[in-house]
Image 1 (cartoon, rainbow, N blue to C red):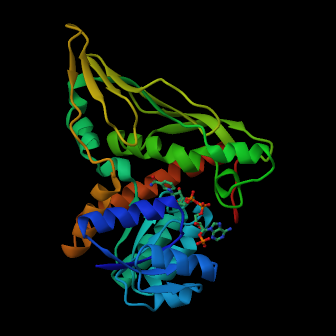
Image 2: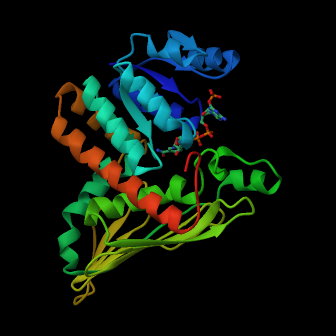
Image 3: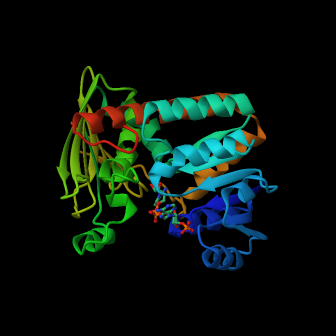
Length: 325
Ligand SMILES: NC(=O)c1ccc[n+]([C@@H]2O[C@H](COP(=O)([O-])OP(=O)(O)OC[C@H]3O[C@@H](n4cnc5c(N)ncnc54)[C@H](OP(=O)(O)O)[C@@H]3O)[C@@H](O)[C@H]2O)c1
């Protein structure tokens, strides 16, 4: 398969590397807002074409478009590609409202193409291992998931340079940037919660720099702590009546242990995993298209819809609104 890209930051370079190393897809075209960057990026990654207009990218011969632009642009860019008959691999979060995901899904069905939201952590082997071992903890009584990672862009923010990820205009903030990793994990593992609350630590421009999400399920709660303005050392945990699963980091998981409550025996469950974990999601994306696997498409799109729905509810409860809301 051939692909073109929107967004020329490091995550796109990781995606290109994953495609190249696995030979699952070949970079064909590069879109950038500026000619110099488009040309340079295309040359660096041996792409045949470069563009400064989205229309040029849409009319090339690529099978799919990889989108890694600022969050608020995803919805329109995905729709433009889908309406042109291109498959799409879009970075998380694909949309910031449930309605955006529903519209993308409708358009993809209408045009017979596949759309995929890049949740690399949910396709990696150690996450699959976590899911397989979930029942070992017995009745789940509590979950703590954390994604706390100081961002160098916060240094810039403090000097008055507001990066897209710290701006409402571009649907930034910690919930949309890091929070969607644990939120999607919770929804993938436990389904939709009965209720959600979000307690953000807001920066001077009203965006969330840190925050705590609480998801209520009938017999347990999930607490999610996220931050882009601090670092942490605590792991994540799923604890039940029979034992505890401890996760060193959720994206990617490199250590995963089960501690038996009674015997206190600790068992390591994580295996070797490729450092470039985008390879796993790219592999699934390609398989879905090659095998016309509508069942997986629907399952993953439903998960995307749920994540958008609950992040939207959480944001609005905390008074965080994005363009058009
Ligand atoms: N899966 C992961 O592990 C992972 C990791 C990092 C990021 N992401 C996701 O990837 C996406 C991009 O994140 P990022 O941090 O790279 O974002 P970013 O630096 O703000 O922007 C990404 C690209 O979008 C273009 N862009 C920048 N500002 C723009 C503007 N004002 N208007 C239009 N285009 C603009 C730029 O490309 P040009 O200058 O070439 O046009 C830039 O390279 C986000 O959705 C993020 O959540 C995912």
